[in-house]
Length: 115
Length: 114
Image 1 (cartoon, rainbow over the protein chains, first blue to last red):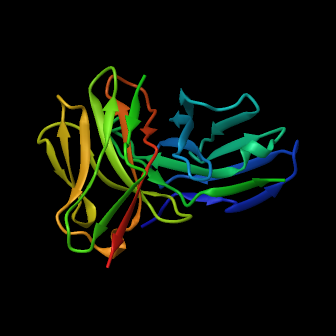
Image 2 (image 1 turned 180 degrees about the vertical axis):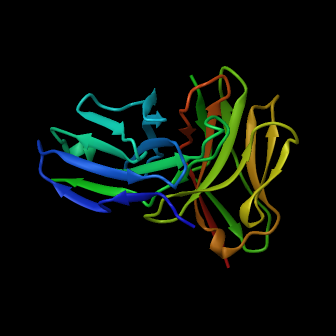
């Protein structure tokens, strides 16, 4: 079965650079979520999109922005990178019809390292 | 605001013994509760959820969890642990009154010894 696809899987950037992470949800899933997981930490909710509109916002820094496109894939753009942005970034999707009760299907994550 | 507490950083159990991983939650409305498992450098995998109905829910790999409204708890259980169950377990909650945000607990590392 198709899963959530994230790219790139690994990314190394310098401080103050910009990074873009991509997420392709499971086909026919219309809700996408972004989470940030630091080393030994729980996943922190950043932002979510439902039917291409921002649906909820968490602890996403102002330096970050995200959007969901017409094909439902989503991109997380991170600018002015800081050392503390080094983390595993997960994308998750959930199926239509139950945006509130459905479980999340996670991708394998994108590991960002800021040097 | 919603929150989740997992009071144990690590749970150690011998293979074949029952296991319990504890979780308590706080939401303003009714809770939707979830358990996920994470293996090293992998994404989280869904185990089970409580939305409504029977307080005892059964999930993947023989896991089950009991919803206790009065104690605001949702403990994960398995009658007989396997070495392969060793992983990081996250409890999560979503407020049923609306919103898409799912909040995760700090995680509990389960170590099953052969």
